[in-house]
Image (tube, rainbow, N blue to C red; front, side, top):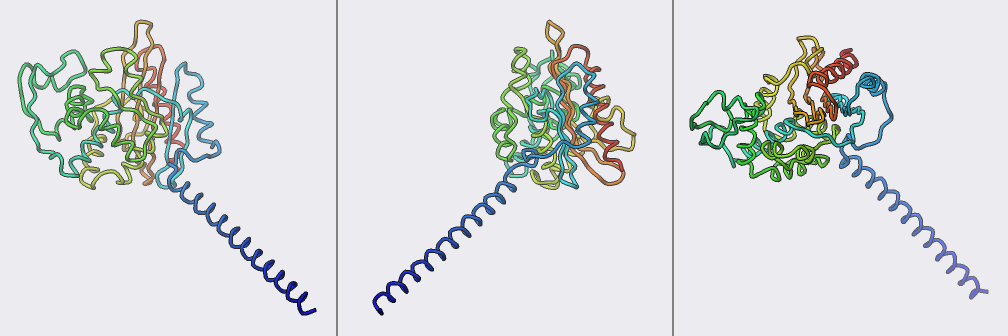
Length: 326
């Protein structure tokens, strides 16, 4: 009897141990899933997380519906950490919008001591393309001259000068260096592979410099929140984008004059069939009530003058402003 009782006690002990093991295993699995979800939530960019279409997105769809163009929109409410998008996951040619990430890369090199803003660059007149958008050439006709990196940034960002842009690409180490810098910052849905002069060489090359609107909006948010550059560099680039001489008929076009806009435009030419690849504008908008939002509008592959694309961008910006102003 004692023998059988011993077996029964042993079996009960084994059963108890098995139940304890199963409980511990289940707890570990649950903890693992919770940890994995937490890591995913932190590592997955805001724009990549799923969300339900909002009222603003429906309004934006209505705004762009009458136009014959491919339009991509992304908006981030900076204070509330919310995003909205229409066609935001498609690839669009950036054109001169890529001068914004280029400026970030150059200023990051300054922050790490690899460049100085007052460093003088010698520029030979033969190296400048006179058949491109070039305030730099107009301001220094038929002459060699020196210019600081800070002033080259101002020409590239505020005046959208193509020669200054390509000089900065050369200083940075080429488009791949800039592309790698942006990817290292966590923005992967962007490709910077060609300079201004290379884009000029053939129509299709401009499409190799592409970005998803949601990715550009996230880059703007990181920039505004000071997560990419030093306070000094951040302030300098914000100033250059705010005092921009780029077209004021896009994001700023239909907004009240007291709205502060720090932005960068991009504009393509048209091909022999009259197709225009890009009329773009991206920026940080500051409202009088203290709210901020990042706005990206890429208008691609339409027929007509840039004014057609500019009207779309202006109406989109007004719609977003109206949504956020209260």
